[in-house]
Length: 148
Image (tube, rainbow, N blue to C red; front, side, top):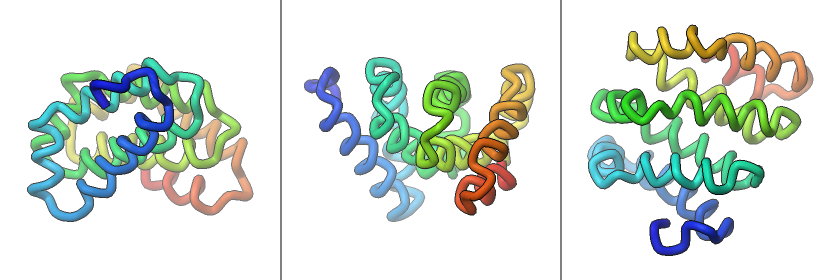
């Protein structure tokens, strides 16, 4: 990820790999945070803001990697909720981005009071509502939005 920051394919598949590895076990997820991979994902989201594939896989990786206490602190320190919100707004017609962005918001705010407060300050509830309205017929978006 670090050597090929400008290559969308590398970033998309690297984000996917981080997410998949993080689901293997909690130790892998914690290690991803310790290695700075959440910061790398955030950088990929910023560099490739207009690429739906990078945004979808980044949101998925954030959701899957943030499901432990150690990484909820890291995502809060990085301000990843802002990046997730930007992805939701930039790609509001893309179901995959909306599914995993809603999932990431849900995971990031479920056990972390600071993240819940930040989500409120950012107005993420309106973004989740927009996703639900825009993708009313998509069960995945509806499910993850309700969990958020």
